Each structure stands twice: as C-alpha cells, then as structure tokens.
Length: 101
Image 1 (cartoon, one colour):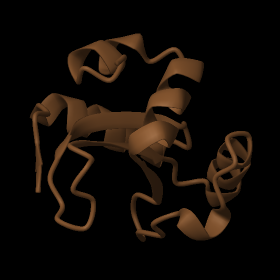
Image 2 (cartoon, rainbow, N blue to C red):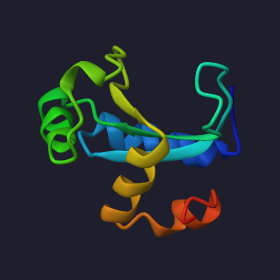
Image 3 (tube, rainbow, N blue to C red):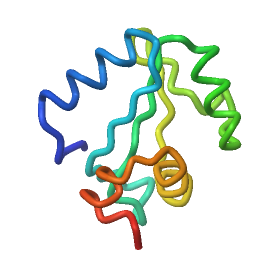
C-alpha cells in the first residue's frame, strides 16, 4: 500500500519517465514481505536501456526492473534506497521521509 504522495508528484514522475528521463518518486509503503521498510523509491524511465545503464552504476541488476508496459522502474528500499538517493542528490526526499539516519 502506497501513501504520502500528492497527485501532482505522481503526475510529474509519470511525465518524466514517459519522456525518457530517469525519474524518482519516494513514498511511504507497507508490504508484509519487507517488514523493516516503510518507504520505497521508484526510479522509472520508459527507455529500458537507459534505465538498465543507470542501474548498473549502482549495482542494480536488469532483472530487478519491474517491466511495466507504461512505467518500467526499479523499486529501491533499505540501504540501496538511502545510498542511491544520497548519491543522486535527492536531499528533499531523504529529509521528507526521514532517510538520513
């Protein structure tokens, strides 16, 4: 279950991803499969090759891409999420979701 995002944030993420940009969207998230994680960052881009190349910089494997027909994306959580957001300079998302611990 996702929560903690505004409609305009989701719309902007979709727009960027559809235009072939690497787009970031962090939100609160609860999933019983991942009891120690309460946020997720979706990193999307409709250009799969670009998304794969971007992910390789961070050790993300192409088979980890959620190959959604419209919005292919990586789901980042835990240490990957925090470290990548730091390296990408996404300080607003880090602060907003208290990920700088």
